[in-house]
Image (cartoon, rainbow, N blue to C red; front, side):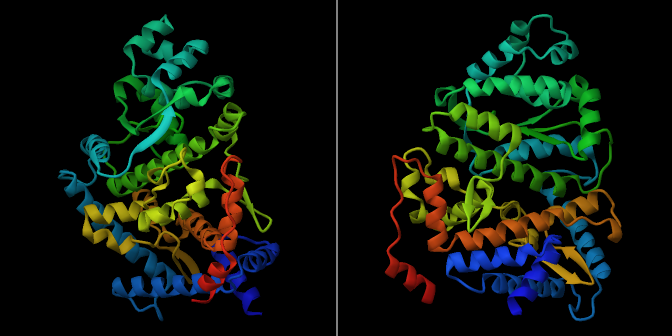
Length: 428
């Protein structure tokens, strides 16, 4: 009964109304040989939510969900002002002043940025094969060669997202099927701030549709800040910095995945399919499909704590630095110590009548959009909890072996962990 009731609580937090969820968790428990992972995770969520509620000056026993929500929004406001000052801004709501500061700050931030992405020469070759006519018209070019000679290719790739049609993008993506590992190179992720005069009208339409002004191209290693159609927006710094760090993790995550796939004969097909559809069945654990994102996050946390945990079977294609993963909150509190409040809280929420997320991205989005308690978002918390739940199961030796076996090239078979060492780990 405890397992069923605990699964029901986790399902409620995740927004899942599926009786099969408890069966799925039970399968993971059996496969991992570690009963009680879900119970320990929920106990940790309760402990951390109570601790942070008290840090806000509230009593977790008699604080309503709405009171907690407004206290968190008040804290986000203060932390946004702190961050804006760290960037040299005088007004936390001045969009035109802060956007270039944010772009410059993130570009020079001392955090791993190396990725395995398309060579510029390859990127230009693909553009020449499928000229982006709408971009050429907007920029005033009659010749694709003239455009490629004068315009940064990374910026052109980003602009495709909001200038060209979905049909054109699908046609363009088909060219990836013919790529090989020779078309890739290692370089740093590039952060761009697009010129409003150059891209303003089409970029503004995209921003309104997406409800944020960040876009990226995984295969090019480019993240772009688009111009905003407003001059004032309190909360812009504390919203954009975590979002940019999230996309940095995303590009590095896919970079590691593509490096792992480079020995496959269908590398180009895998690349095209991943970029077009982002399948979630990279590995299967106890009948559950698990995205590479969850695996990368688990292995990346291990690398951050102990590089000796790096799977040798991934070498020489994937090195320890490729798996390095650090949450946005972990980076930001090193910039502004006050933000330590949000450290390791991305999968934590309080359930006090309603669910209130302690995830920094959720709180920042609520603040920057001036959302009421009834309009609040908990999407990023739920994604964080889902990843954390699966990461804890695949971190167990028996399941980690299964995961690595599915991901490792056939030329590097995974050795089955010694059964005695597994038992020692289980009972320590």
